Image (cartoon, one colour):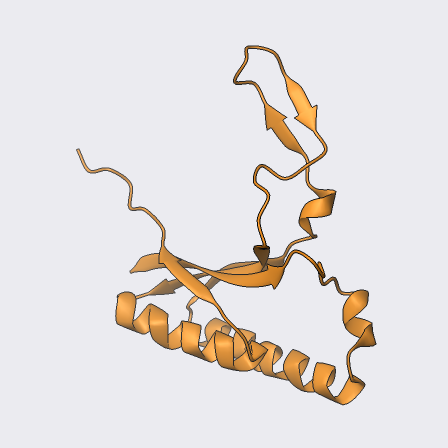
Length: 125
């Protein structure tokens, strides 16, 4: 089995958070949360879930840079972009097709876009 990284993109301009999601229509938010919960349950029941999580927005990021030979801690993300990873799943799937099927279910639950990429396999000797 290979592991795959499913990422949830967010718009940098709005930086949605759990707090700001409370401004959504309560019925729509409840439906999305229920769909995501059902998706997570399906992943667990299939033995496909490695772990998952939500991330705070880039405005909260710190970047540690030692490339100049001295340690600098910057109050910023390592890259500025129009969108960012707001949450993720790491799953196990038999192949790319199976990973895409899980990704379709995740995108359907969130009613949005999800990116999927395989994690690199360790080098063989």
